Amino acid sequence: MFYPEEIIEEVRSRSDIVDVISGYVKLQKKGNTYFGLCPFHNEKTPSFSVSKEKGMFYCFGCGEAGNVITFIMKYENYTFVEALKFLAEHSGVELPEMEQSEAQKNKANKKLQILEINKIAANYFFWELGEQSGEIALTYLKKRGLSDEVIRRFGLGFAPKDGRKLYRYLKEKGYSDGLLMESGLFSADERNGAYCKFWNRVMFPIMDANSRVIGFGGRVMGEGEPKYLNSPETLLFDKSRNLYGLNYARKSKAGYLIVCEGYMDVIALQKAGFTGAVASLGTAFTSGQASLLRRYVDQVYLTYDSDDAGTRAALRALPIIKEAGISGKIIRMDPYKDPDELINKEGAEGFQKRIDEAENGFMYSLKVLMREYDMDSPEGKTKYMNAVAERLTTFEEEIERNNYIEAVAKAYHVEYEDLKQLVKKAALRLGQAKVVKRPLPTGAKKKEREDGEELAQKILLTWIADDREVYESLKDYLDKADFTKEIYREIYELLVKQYEEGSVNQAMIINHFTDDDEHKEAAGIFNSKIRGLEDVNEQKKSIIDTLQKVKERSLKEQVKALDPTDISGLQEVMKKKQALEQIRRIEIKMID
Image 1 (cartoon, one colour):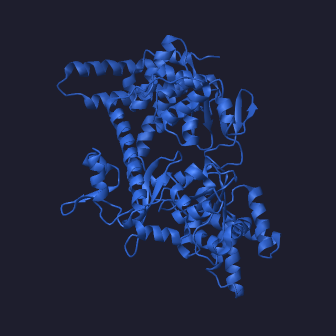
Image 2: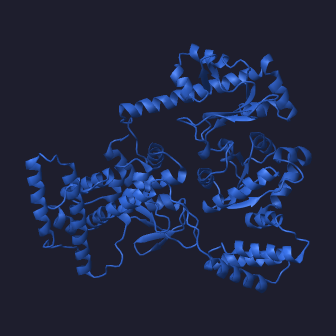
Image 3: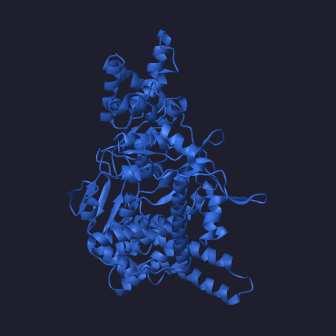
């Protein structure tokens, strides 16, 4: 725990969950609960609920759940501590110095040291760019049209051919070999010893949203492979969850962001006044990057290279962007290779014209699909329209599907009703086909079995958390050893503690879990509803059945763990088995 629980609870309780979430999601009150469109998945009908009374949110569509701290963690992509600090600042709570374990202190200190190393390295590379050894890199950047001001703004630099210069420089400042290796800047072998991975390269510092250097990208000067080299993943750098140029782009007032492929594209666009330009970091576009974009905008333009690889990359990114709840459009570069080349040829006005003419992602995918068919023959056209109809069936919402049918009919000069009938036939045809089942990942069957064993425990915790009378009825028959998962044991202990002290505060229990997944699991327990049991007697019978399952499993595990020579232990288990027979006679009380 980074902070005392009472401090965390003060921040949570003083941060009105409805007020906080209303700043991100439009909420409408229905009874005692507020509803809105879930910000964590794409939906048309509101399934995202917020309870002021419980201090928690829950999405019935995707299962995301938690308290106000969890929401900020998820939406802003913050760590627990960052979310807590954010809410503390907005609610006027002064946080004390963090309480950290030795391991936590060491990790936090190591992150700070790597940040220092990166900052020193970035300044070093910038300095080298101005030296004689960096002339080749400076000439390259000047030929690309970059001024001294732009070079300084993006912190561009040069890694010299001597890969040991930076190593010696940092060693003189007292950094250990181990820490230098963990920074991702260095490699080592028996022949050369330690040396910088980046040598003879123009250097692009990669910064997080707060302008801290978390990694580097380097373009080789002259011949050499790879042409572009990025830092490996470190304690600071996860390329699937960061975007180059976001530290500047997030401040853009344009209302949209432009996603490019390369560093130079971002620099060229921002230099030309398109301040919302960012780039993925030498990898395919990811859901983590889409979530990052979603924090700032709901409209994204993809401006990938015009070659086949760029086209494929754009088509792969579109569904990821849509899944994140972002509208995606495609900016066409033809006949130019990339945004940098287009701006050099046509200027900012030319690129703005491309933005104005940007294509809807789905319509663009149909144009790309056309390349696979002979559109000069009636047979080819028919096959193409059937393929288009199949793609139109992927829209689940009828209104959206009909809107796209209308748009496609207009674009391809076919009758709306004819195309709609073709889509219906495609849906019937696809519906009769067998669904291809995805292979289960390794260990999936075992996980499914474990989930079945744990389901009864989860249901039991839900009953107990929802009703004090149920807790009072069962407390003499349960203990923490009856729960297999550590988080279930902790939740049970916290529930017992709160009930014995007065009343349950479920949102406060969630505070105990600083891990994102644990937050979600705990909140899921507190927000689950036992469905299909309207009759009170049915509910009571279900509670008894669930308790018996939990106790039987618990006893089996205890028997397995016993030493065969442990006579007293065996006798204790026998007593517990006999007590199982009494469970059926428990009188369950419930709050009316």
